[in-house]
Length: 175
Image (cartoon, rainbow, N blue to C red):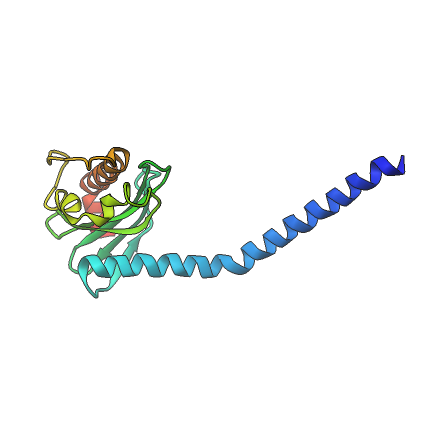
């Protein structure tokens, strides 16, 4: 009987110890991780608009893909969108809008797409440039050959940012 109970007790102790260690590790690192994410977001906004003060909007306007929205003092807006490309949630992009409501730039906070193929949505500036100047979803779109899923994911991210921005422009700009 002891031979049957002892392995169960040992395994339970190991599982409880592992769970406690994971909990402690999470608690110790969660603030640092949040700071790093905030720093990455701020640097991406700075790449879009230059050095500026931003005001964060605490609203995703009903879209689970919107992770953050920031507005500069001169009316420019950055919308962080996480979309599926080839990888689920593989595209974490910051879509920048100028004061007139047209897309003025795109920066990537993170990209979990396949290196060499899906990463072309970030690496090929001509692909990103086709979105610049769009103010609605009627722009022309050419996918990257070999990176169709990533291209369509990027288009979806841009379309999501455009829809949220256009549908909620007053609320976003007026805080």
